Length: 256
Image (cartoon, rainbow, N blue to C red; front, side, top):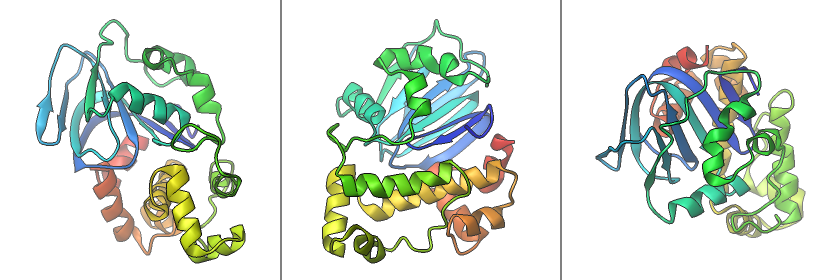
């Protein structure tokens, strides 16, 4: 956990924000939206507004969407994690599902966030405490044990969440393959086979989490960009907008 309104851990990014306005975007994560009932929430998925007498939504990974929300929680979960697999099974290949949680009050940020968010995760029989305390998923995209080489790589990447981020200046596939004792082509195939997506998009996702962690630690956009391996703040900002639908300035306001 970074602070009460931002959680950035292996497998999950959760943000509580106000006056959120994300333009059309898509990312690899499965997304949960839990808006405050007293506010406004307008979700558009693949060009169509999602309506209904509900106050929560679940969006499949790599689905274009945009969101306007007065205040509430946005929770992004890596699809190959055990929780991500559970959420994908709930969707049953649908791009979005409305969640009937009108009787559950959307919680404000608090120290014991697992307890606060548990009513939402009860819908999917997911233990929030386990999800928020996990340091490694340990499973592949099919829910089976991870290949030990990929597990070793994720363990190294997860070091970013335990202290200073590991600058991604040696994350070329060829270099990783050498460290793991396999060819580059074998590594790229193995990673996609185990994680359900190619290495480069996954690395980009992790670099953005690194940048969010830096921004939450009150570093400016330039410092966050360099720490996460982007050439400059403009490069980070373009990538951030493409994947999250908001600018760095909007993100800083949300993370404050």
